[in-house]
Amino acid sequence: MEIRLGSLVRDAQEAQGTTIIIDVFRAFTTAAIAFDHGAKEITLVAEPEEALELHRRGIGDYLMGEVAGKLPEGFDFGNSPYEISQVDLAGKTLVQSTRAGTVGVAAAVNAAEIFLGSFVVAQATVDAIRKDGPDLVSIIAMGDQGVVRSDEDEHCGIYLRNIMEDRRPDFDAVKSLILKGGATQKFFDPDQPQYHPEDVTLALEADRYEFAMKISREDGLLVARRHNL
Image 1 (cartoon, rainbow, N blue to C red):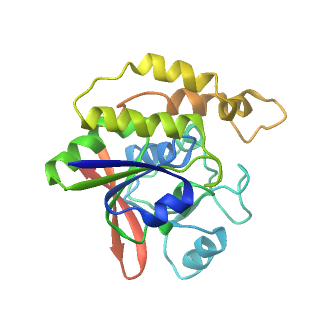
Image 2: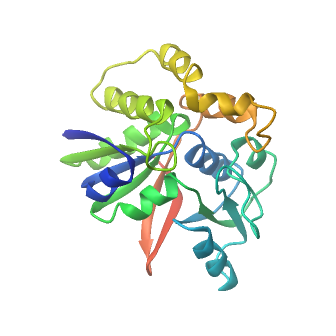
């Protein structure tokens, strides 16, 4: 199995084979918690306007996402693991739009299969991919706004590769590096209340869930569902 590491939108556009699109802070931690709280499916779109249009067409019970970290007008939930952990989503469908993770999924037009990547589903994602046995795996760290590399996504990509290659990384060491990273500091800034300190706690819990999140392409839409092993 060949494993390629990449970063940001440009590498998402070029990704081939089975592809993991990573967004630790916060999109694909939030998505995992939404599935754990009963969400049936999540349709991913790059732009908030697309989400609103889909909702007007009757797709998605709720809209979830962010622009510049904040709740877009007309959305029900922000892009916060902590906020979504307080919601009962049993049987509900969501449409998610963020400025990094969902943009990366939309950009990955050359990928054969797409999984959503974060620490909370790391081992389950690797196990699901190994079960399929692809020749090529592309791991794409989406970073800040999809244009600037971020510690948490880059480290998650390396962490996933190490697991896939049967090496056992020290997660506590990885976590320590991320906690010192610049992208983490905004979660502890009282002037940016859209970022919760609890988001960091929830995002930096390795293998919290025993399911992966896999994209299905359906009638032009990118639909994520819980993928049980």
